[in-house]
Length: 136
Image: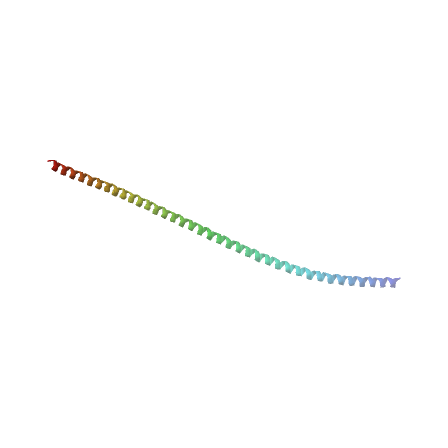
């Protein structure tokens, strides 16, 4: 029975050794897989970091572009206000000129009427003098 026991022990030892070798191979395989996964994770982290940096740069560009647009809008608003002011001043000038011309025209019309009335009066006076001369 001692030989059978030793033979059984050898079989068990060999089976355990083979199982151990299979486990070692499996552990090595898992280690390789784990190494690949870690490398993939590192690549993804780097990609993510680059994308984050790119997004940040893009956001900074957008903020800068927005600031430029705001500055341009403010400049255009100031220019528009200046133009409106100039147009208002020109309008006031035109109103004053129009009123002045209207006053001149009115004065000329009045002078014309007065001249006409004066001529009529002079004509009546001449006729009266003529009539006076004839009656005398």
